[in-house]
Length: 420
Image (cartoon, rainbow, N blue to C red):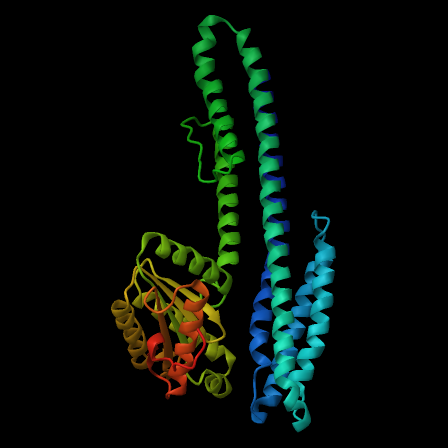
C-alpha cells in the first residue's frame, strides 16, 4: 500500500532537485552577465577622472592609468560576449556599447597623451565631448543592466510556477489515491502526507509570488522533510542572490556606501518628500584635499584604503536616516532629510574635524592624515529646486577649495556672481 506513495515521494524529490538545478543554473547565468557589466560601469566612472589631469608631470601616469583601465574594460567586454545569453537583444546591445566605447577610447588616448600647446586650446572642448559620450555609454550600460535583472527575475518566477504546477499535480494524484484507502487510515494519511504536501504547495506558491523569505516547517523525519529542507535551501539561495543583485546595483563596490545612481534616486525621493511635507533637506558635498598627491606618493591601493576609511567615518558621523554616497572619485555626497541649516552646519563641521584628526590607516605600518573641503546647501532656505540644491552645494564645495581647503562653505557664502 505504501509503494505508490514512496514512488510519488521519490518523484517529488526528483522534481524538486531538478527545479533547484534549473534555479541555480539561471542564477549563475545572471551573475555571470551582471558582474562584468557592473565592473565595466565602475571602470568607466573611474576613467572619467583620468582625462581631466592637467599638469605635465603626471601625464605619463595618466596615460598608463588610462590604458590599464581601458584594457580592463575591453577584457570585461570580452568576458560578457564569450558567455551565452537567453536574452536575444543582449549581444546586440553589448556590441553597440563596445563600438561606442572603442571610439571613446581613441578620443581619451588623444586627450591624455597630447601635450602640445596647440592642442591645449582645444582640450577643454574634447574633454567635454569625452564626458558627454561617456555619460551616454553609462546610460546604455545601466539600461542593459536593468533589462538583464528584469529578465532574471522573470525567469525565476517562471521556474517557480513550473515547480508549483508539478507539486499541484502530485497533490492531486496522491489525493485520488488516498480516497481509495479505508476510513480508518484516512486520518493517519492526512497527517502524514496531505498536510506536508499542502505546506510544500504553499511554499512554492509563496516563492512564485516573489516571497523569498518564506520557509516550510515540518516536524516529520521522512522524504517530505527532505523536500522541505531542499525547498528552504533553494529559497535561501534565491534570497541571497536577489540581495547580491540589489547590493550590486545600489552600492559602490569599493566603499560600500551608495553609488552615484542610487544617490540620484534618493535625492529625488527626499527632495519631493521635503517639498510635500514642508520640512528642510540639506546636501553636503565632501571632497578629499590633495587626493591625487596621496595616490602619487603611496599608490592607488593606499588611496582606495583611504576612501574606504573616510566612507566608514562619514557613516559613523551622520544619523541613521542620513544617506551617504560616493559621488565620484574622491568626492562624497551626504543627504540630510529633515535637517535645518544650523543642524547641517554642525554635522559638516564635525565631519571636517573628524577627517582632519583621525589617522587614516593605509597599510600595516603607515598612517596618514587627510583633510577635506565641504560644501553645504539647504532646501528651501537656499534653493527652490532639486537641480539648484545640487548645483549650490557643488559651488560651495568649489568655494571651500578656492579659499584654502580644509573648511566648510555654505551656499550663502558663494559669490553673488555664481549662477543659480
